[in-house]
Image 1 (cartoon, rainbow, N blue to C red):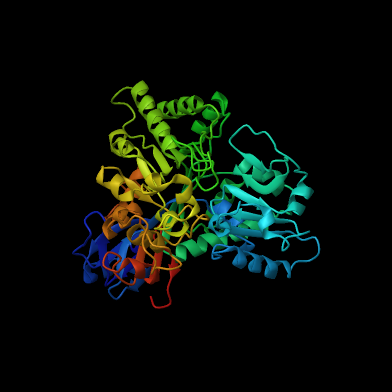
Image 2: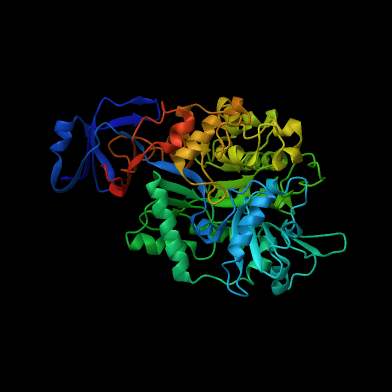
Length: 544
């Protein structure tokens, strides 16, 4: 059978060894790599309908996979005014004023990417943005996507005039007199006001998602581990897949929230493996805490404001029971755990689940912890001992903290814990499998930026600034493995993904240079010449 795709004059990079393979050409058919060899022998596999591309020495790697992203949520949230590049309150006010001047009377102002560091020593509250937002209904998503800042008019339209009680760790932040400050913490509180805002049509949302996924493919991504299946996400993936318009291979983990009973757990178990050609439901996503920046993480000692003292699950033992149920059913889990107490509890829960299943049972069930922003020494070795994947997002450290610890995240934690920021190096050295991702829309999805951040740990907006914890940097090869070999292993797909070998998926990223020798600060500018998913190009630079 003739090949569907032939790539010639290529440098084939093996992320397992960091060396180039001796072969210079690759053939693919029916979504898989069918042959490696020299140009002459691989060219013979082409037929009249084969796409034959001369790469002129470009570097081919296994397709880059984002270990943690939210495509539908990101497409929904990352529209309106982008505030991510504002570095102080004056810049935020100016940007809001320009946007407000374009609005029709009564229209809502939506913004995203707001960095709490712009508030300095001031509380994060709507009053800091007066009078710019006076009379304007506005919702500003903070960069962590776990909190919103709502203007007084937005609160009024939503009927939010005081504190509320929730079944999970969420809060309408109020002043001493019980009046909302505008800050809403976690989904349950944010939804109170979001429901009052105008909603886009389904077609608009689908188009935004399709555009975001195309842009991801153009950045070199061939896949992603999706950490939510909320609303109509799965319907969107199914529609795009059926139409041949899904440019990424997606592994989707639906949420399990506090209060989920046995029936809900059984439904999550039954949902496993459903999907289409290029997407499937695999695993379950849970939350053990919130974020350090808004005081909802779970720490072993309170932060400087006396906050971050509670788990997201009001009864942490209930979380432990759910992990045991899912493990016994062979379902892998991915738990959001940022604070040290949260990480420790997840490790304890996995250990109990494995013990209950028997010492040799469940070895193929790869549980994960997402984020792991600060952990003490005694937790490091447990990742490898328990086979728990460390899923990390290095650009969060790069862009939302500072080397001198004057940022909000570091000040909340204090010097001791801030010095344990994103311990990628220590986790890798302890034997843990470290998977890298962006957590888009929290940080940009471009994979070369993620790989670069894991190496340089400097602020993306100003690479001349010092790195935060340079001793925790990964090598170029370790970073590349985090989005290829290790991403495949975390998904239980190491036999068919993350490598350039016959029989493996023809998911490929083609770069204009060697990502292992390109300096970290220059890596984001390395041209992405070709992205191939399932043997078909999803992005092709005009030069190819």
